[in-house]
Image (cartoon, rainbow, N blue to C red; front, top):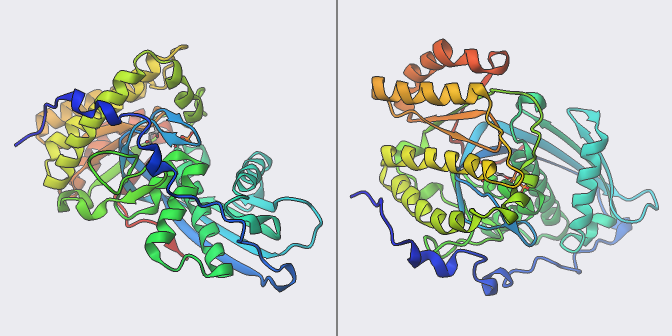
Amino acid sequence: MRLLFYNISSFLPIFRPQSKSVLFMIDYNNPELLVTPHKVRSGKIEWRSPSNIALIKYWGKYGQQLPCNPSISFTLDAAYTETTLEYGPKMSDKPGVAVDFLFHNQHNKPFADKIEKFLTSLLPVFPFLSQIELTIFSSNSFPHSAGIASSAASMSALALCLCTMEDELFGTLSDDVQFEQKASYISRLGSGSACRSIYSKAALWGATPESQASSDLYAIGWGHHLHPVFSTFHDDILIISKEEKNVSSTAGHKLMEGNPYSETRYMTVQARLKQMIYALKNGDVELFGDILEKEAYSLHGLMMLSDPPYLLLRPGTVSVIEKVAEFRKTKKIPLYFTLDAGPNVHLLYPDEYQDAVQAFIKSELLRYCAEGSYIPDKVGTGPKQL
Ligand code: DP6
């Protein structure tokens, strides 16, 4: 049975912002996490953390990076960040956070400033960050200029390093569930979508009646609910443009605040999430694809309905979308697309069609890609400590 129609009013009481009591049950601020400076040993921690692709999109936020609606994602595999964090006793008398940051082994001032600001904002959670010296090396598996949102991978990799450091210094996060939850919470503070990258295969973020364990504060692992067809799904990312977007995701979230269609969005997205969850659990690839594409259109529709309106789709994006629809119809192959807040197209399909889809991409779609570039990716098993 398809669950296509819902009484939307049944979702109204919870659509935003959800149960504040739940929100305040967790307080990670901990003034006791302080080291004895001369006893700090040096350490080195390394994590690889992947990007993720939202199937139901997080679009609009409130408070401290809290989502206006729940989202669900596949964790990716090939698109990842590797972050190495070296720490040791603080030699300088610089107050606050002392951090050196290198991206692909190069000093990068804008990134370093952003990281220092983020770590400073985390001092109530990790007060020991002002007592030690840090050097952070970060690199992506994909070119920075590929136009792929790297914040999910990079912020989750950093959050995992910070939580591992807490555990090395204080032994406070030996429980895997608590470790993941805190890593997801910290990732969220860095970039909302990053909180979903912590988990194998799939993650759900944002309070929803679909899951009692769900929270706006952190994502929860959802991979164990996936029907087998989805745990080997592909996501090939077509790079339509490598240019920097003229409206960032953060600015886009902000524009939802004055968008006259945002409340309608927050009401209807709960029903869509319910349908998506049904499809993911039951292996209903057709329903999955239907909802997936509607979400992509909705996201970009909301951008066009913002004030001021803006358009991130490029002519190549539209051509690829049309070609995909035609391919699906004529070949009877369940190939679907989704979009992030940018022009690049994610192509999602079951593993059994890998050869047919790859041939189609090469013969028909690469001509729309910037320098013919695309990243063949798939559902992955989540972050790995190296
Ligand atoms: C369209 O997580 O990049 O990709 O929280 O401001 O860092 P910030 O935004 P970000 O927004 C992602 C938006 C999206 C949808 C999604 O990933 O859910």
